Image (tube, rainbow, N blue to C red):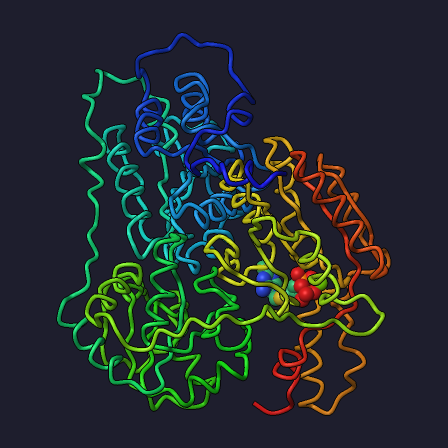
Length: 602
Ligand SMILES: Cc1ncc(C[n+]2csc(CCOP(=O)(O)OP(=O)(O)O)c2C)c(N)n1
Ligand SMILES: [Mg+2]
């Protein structure tokens, strides 16, 4: 693809004509809301949600009809998924790029049960989405024998309440309209997260007694202004101005380029070391001279640990786990400024809020609002070193094909194309890639739920479609196999995406856990693979891609074949296809992660 074509990236929210031309219904001639579910459909359209990823079910057949025959399957357009977990994961991935909620719909209790893992991932990742479910009929007199009874559950929202921001089961079409507007508003307001609305089948299917009065939906979703307090900004700026060794922990951030540039300006104004985290999306240029070490996930780079240890003032820009990073670095003597609204979300069920960190100044707003305020308060002047650092990457060694060989060849194959890493494997080394733009890396699955990679990547690729960015996912084989049916959705809706599977034929993470237990108990570590290896037979991952309409490549078993295979797979993606590359890698994690995971002591 030419540079000029790439540069003419269209707006993310623009309608994709190729997708819009798919799954067209014959005209139904319906132009007035006649049923409860038509009111629900109108409310969804008012949220300005382009897509609703779903797996069907009779509990919401009323709404299904309204989406197809009343709205004409547009705004939102249905994206059929083969599993509810991928329907919700697609909405999650879409939000990672756009910052905005997409919709998903899941069948009564059973569909929601399938979807719970993806809810949890999105919740921990603080990503917005509006999920519709269904039940009933709640009125037992209207239930069909057996099936309507097993698929009616009291308080379905309880299944996901510990990891959603809000849920409801509205009893009338007007209440459902209100619930949908509220769900969209709450999901999209920071701290963001999933919301769930359970629609009574009886309510959906009932004829409207009278037309509903239209409302201006925008008035029910007011902008929430999260400006920082002037006092907190002043206190923080005073601390930072006088700091000798300031450190910025750049955590959760938006995908805004302006905000990215402001973070860079703040770091340069303060001459602060910056630490980033692979658990969240790119938040700072990894090859900027102020970036400390390579971004880590489980383990902190030694440069980052050292910077934190010697810091006198630490500015956390919504760092995911502040107490944890202090524990890992081994010291917390610095004054701590925390910029976050995350505390507003914490509840009693899920401990994803992490340890309680020491905080001297809390700036209770999103980092995007605090950074320009801090820059203004600091004023011009101060160090503004702008030395550039040569791009250094890890050098893979040995002649056995490892994840480092995979990542190096992949990086060289994508070259200077704008690329979004939509997912990385657990075996990924942070030193193998450079992030120079907020869309260069979209972060992890959030909740550590294996199987999220494919669905999240399809959702991200959907949002990136037409922007000129190449979506690339690197998944473990365990992750891929759990979520691989998301690929059919990408193939059907012509969503280009490259999935590279770092196939170590194992749930390898847990081999290291078994090794550690064996070491602690002085038992044979040689047995760590039992109950973990996915081999005999090896899974033909390329064939699993092909079977769903993707182009399958590999298995690649030798280093020398990586470059040519990736080139072919990228060409396929640039021609509009989904491509899956099976790379058979040696089992293994980075040396520091392996050491941390297999150490004998606590
Ligand atoms: C839903 C779920 N099941 C099980 C686990 C435990 N678990 C964590 S990592 C992992 C292995 C993942 O295998 P793979 O994706 O192939 O990555 P690898 O460790 O082999 O690089 C497992 C089973 C989990 N985190 N989530
Ligand atoms: Mg594996």
